[in-house]
Image (cartoon, rainbow, N blue to C red; front, side, top):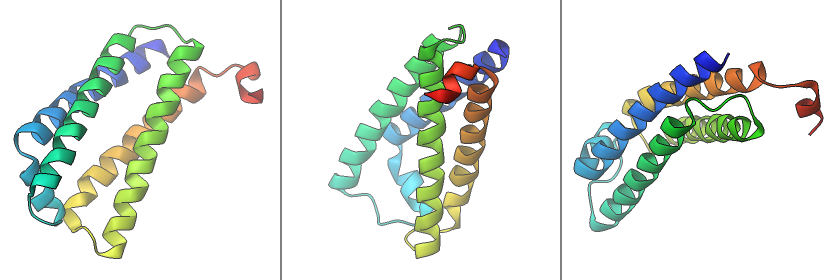
Length: 133
């Protein structure tokens, strides 16, 4: 299953690079799509910081693409499964609460799929000893 982790890591790394660039260069696009308050200085600050985080995630995933199934790779998969699942849940809650519009559905779906795929790679590389931790 190393190959599936490799493919997932590379694809997610590319997605994170695209998200980093878009949050850095055109954050108002996301804000408008989601139907949240317009672009302000504070929103710009948060957007630029999110861009830096996405860039860091891209580097971690790209560098980890060929790591064998070790505790480190399991930690990366668990971290990304958790983060993507949390983002999907938060997005759904914001949509239900009326704080975001239907434009947030695509990110919710993408995050849900990524959470499931990272969880699947995590489950496929688990040993019986890992299940006890």
